[in-house]
Image 1 (tube, rainbow, N blue to C red):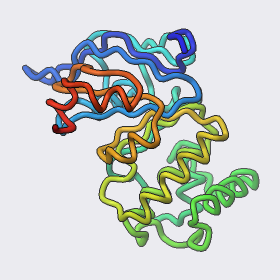
Image 2 (cartoon, helix red, strand yellow):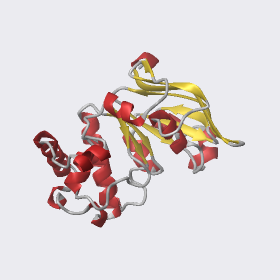
Image 3 (cartoon, one colour):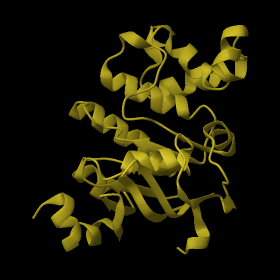
Length: 246
């Protein structure tokens, strides 16, 4: 595929925190319909790059394009409405709300959900469908704070799908969860991808990355050092030295 087929692109993104350059001239392309991995050692700039792409932080220089259009100043709400959303390393949920409330709050601004607590029938039906798909339907009225760590990850993943996005960025979706939950998360990623969803995934589970993703982008000290098919990247000397180990 050519760069013209990219759903999400960055061009020379750079972000500095004081005297530390967290991301340096990082250019990447996420092709529509792909599962792309973003890997690298701890502190390599992966989450910072996610934040720049999704408007949770602003680059010092460089550009972002989504669906071929320049994103002048990335904004999480505007990108969400345009079809780009994300999860976080630590699942962001409302622990005192039920699962169904967590799901439906995602459709509106939180203040609106508080002022207008009534949930539209269509939103409730979609929430139920997603909770069923993610194996959480039996807990629909349970308080989210009572879920296991892995279930909270699943809930957040399901929640970001309420808007029917075109692209989801997953930040370490399997970190800290047990092998059974890893399998469930992988199943959901594969099923959603089969239905046309594009995904960009930060992940440390290398067997999962190599078996799941179409393309792998590698960061080290904020710079992109490799970008290609898994079989190619895992034998790249620079990647072996920086991250995977020989």
